[in-house]
Image (cartoon, rainbow over all chains, first blue to last red):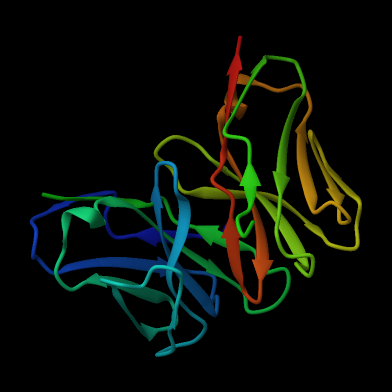
Amino acid sequence: DVKVTQSSRYLVKRTGEKVFLECVQDMDHENMFWYRQDPGLGLRLIYFSYDVKMKEKGDIPEGYSVSREKKERFSLILESASTNQTSMYLCASSTKGWPYEQYFGPGTRLTVT
Amino acid sequence: GEDVEQSLFLSVREGDSSVINCTYTDSSSTYLYWYKQEPGAGLQLLTYIFSNMDMKQDQRLTVLLNKKDKHLSLRIADTQTGDSAIYFCAEIIYSTLTFGKGTMLLVSP
């Protein structure tokens, strides 16, 4: 079974804190993704990575950065958390080729107070 | 428009068929996908269809694709209460997925 795990299910942080969200996949997938999910807005792509040390901006990268030092691990970093970053964060991974099936982790619900 | 469009809500009775509709944007999308999200969980890939197919059946699930109208549908036969969830359609553009906002399916006994 494909397994994508995320470091926390629930996280509460204060405004201005630096926040790290970790994602690990065990399928040797080349591609990894970070999304945020908000009511009424669906899933929006923040960043993705198609190889170690490579990253590409998605639709809403502002306020976020990412790190991919190892193939199996993709980290999302909020340099200075703000209340408008309160959201559900979903990590996914996929193979490099067709049909690009994406497999998702369980999500991290982040609350910034 | 630029968005993948889905109706927001569908309510059915247990045992009925459910049909969830989706309109996508890019006629060059090679694959189209259906995902399911149960409360508090991540997204689970249900099925996908290659763009040169009109139909794909997988047990209780039937996917229909109308490329001319850029319309995708997911039919769930004999819907069960365990099928209650949010269903997302998605298209692939380059190597990233664009998702619709999801259709909440509520199945009543």
